[in-house]
Image (tube, rainbow, N blue to C red; front, side, top):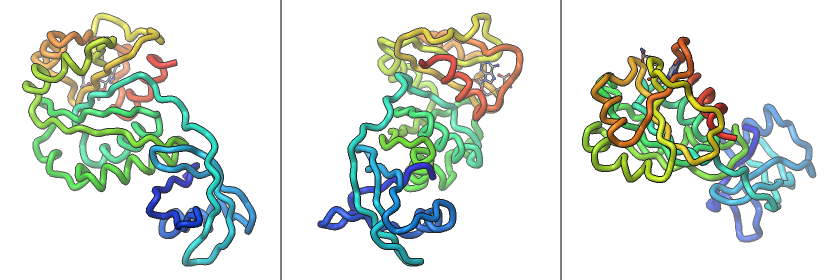
Length: 236
Ligand code: SAM
């Protein structure tokens, strides 16, 4: 937790923030502040700043809130991701938030197992919790929006063209003939496939919606490795 992220429910009328639970454990166990020390804090979907510790016990810490800085700017990139295995999903959601991505479309694909869509990790509160941890890691406050599309074809035919309009639309595909561009300097819509990769039909549907297949080279990367690699290569 590099940033103590909070929402207004935790702030009293005097503008003091109450810290309990996981965040308090981290505060006491890792940051070990003394009274008067400042902690890096941020209001969800708001500004960054510092919280001055004015009281501290094993039950609760109270911080005086001072917010004065904007969060980092977001990369101009929308991410379309074939739904990963539940265990990987939590890590990917954290990475998405930590990397500053603000729009994520989780989609079906032939090689996504149907059972993945039943995972409790796709519930709103579980998604929010994973994103929250990612924002705390990346010192950002802007909660990403996550959309779920359980049918590939209607999504590809009816929504993708509008979603990708005005951007450079790319699908990461190890077998592509073209190399992934470096910092193309325009907004990007990026599609990443499932563990088994997109099938030909899906690559063709993505191409019909304006997506160009691009490769990172012959090494096949896990989704959680491919994502930061692609982002670092595409976004300044
Ligand atoms: N067996 C799959 C294949 O050969 O396509 C590998 C899928 S890989 C584990 C999961 C996703 O990560 C891919 O669908 C692609 O979007 C992305 N990816 C992984 N390695 C890549 C590479 N070298 N170039 C482009 N994309 C890659």
